[in-house]
Length: 287
Image (cartoon, rainbow, N blue to C red):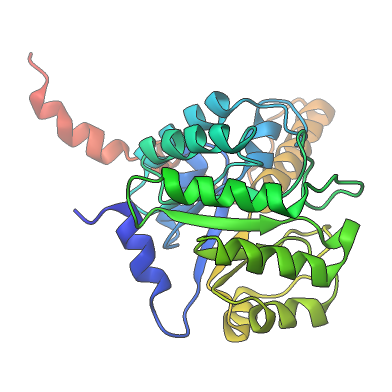
């Protein structure tokens, strides 16, 4: 079988095509992404935090994140791209983090230039680390990977605090330090979204989140602009929260379980987690 790292590299090597990687925060959602035919899954740190009842403020440890990531990677055959926050400390911590993330079987990760504790990239008042400190972390990440195909994505959150040009400059400095993909987080205008692939000296990733700082642009338009990876991390948690809250409200008001948005039986639920394959494996069960 092709390694997830090599599979992702091959997808990125296609001319004029982007990798669309919807967000997931657990193995079930990762399976749903794969079953809809997407070529990759993005493990959202904000989603994992929310699913554990915590805001995206850097509260989870590396082990808590990699525990979830390992289950997600095991659940799917497509590559999984992971959120590694700030690398969990200094350069030595980054070396440890890259090796731990790589051991989960994920295809790559991104590291951002916020100070610890970090905040969600679409919140205000983020504290930005000095550029030389961030570049050292990227160099450490590149040094630490065991598989040369393991993707190192450099994310800058400097847009809101230091301006658009500085955010681009930081991503370019990280690419010069060996990062594979540049990720300018939270551009604030359509002009900025269009400019990033032209100004960044390498392949680009973008995050589209409804209600965030960045305009909503379709995956296909972003592909035309030249982006190579498009992630939609907030969609999962927003959809689950709003759908389940609506069901709970209906149950409380009527005393009856509401119809789901789409008719789904318990068998349909089990089919989403591959019951057919597990039933086929029963031939190994004695008796």
